[in-house]
Length: 371
DNA sequence: AATACGGGGTG
DNA sequence: CACCCAGTATT
Image (cartoon, rainbow, N blue to C red):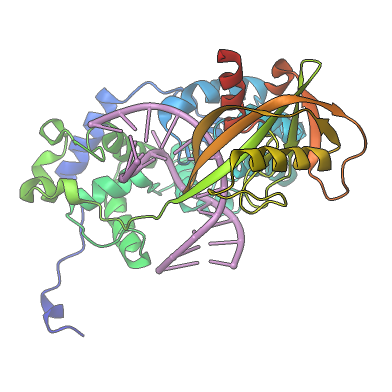
């Protein structure tokens, strides 16, 4: 034991006054978001899955559209996964869409919507945060959802400089958050903390002078708000790809299943990189890239014309930054694809808008029509 | 505990 | 361009 263990700091807790200040601020200043207008657990679950690692501004229009298409658990459970993925296109983290569909099927099988943290936690795609948030918001259960916003607010308010990804730190944060549950509606506690994190206690340039709980904030007192929460840097890998845009009678060749762990069910243009059967690396000359792409197209059962360089798109998938060169030309389906080739299809741009399309492919379509 | 998983908005 | 977002599942 360290020698100073006897004067360890008391566990951080909110005062009753701070809790009142926070909840009063939330009651008057909360944004009118669509998922705050419903008490339907299914709708709230949809919003929470959609909001995982995705900003409110991006989610809002997509949430409305999703619920118009799949208005109930039953409607979603009866839909095909492909329909759900198509509706999810562009939102990223496509496992969420499959999980949401599977969760709807599970709820149908259970006969009723799980109302407890433990019951919700069993649903696919529902982790600690989402189970706590839905339990509190939809059912008034005494749980606080702790997401990135809440972690930031708590680490600053209590000047917690420990790594918030550590289990011990998470326990401290949870206890601190739950100290707000004293007589307050749990759903409002969660959403008030998140709202504060999104509007005042922002990652950069927080507006501490306007914050509802600035008087008790330890980071504001010592000026450490810009340094909290602490985080370790993530390493980003550079990657290079080449994609073939092959047209035939107004339709374009797309594939899916060409990658291993990523974008497995999303349609893309045929793409090669350093790890594919027709590899390219940074040093590969353009003529060889074009040749490898044609070889790939050949393996897909297509006889391509020579391909011309048509531009470059930059995009990122999680920890990779990708430079993708586009090579465009014509091609004719000639025979069956090689047995281990990925799934292929020909789509007009209109048809492509209705299938699960990776964002890079959407960007590529845009690049072509702008020319 | 570390890593993979999308995509986009923002300073 | 770096950071990071209403995180989860897997290793």
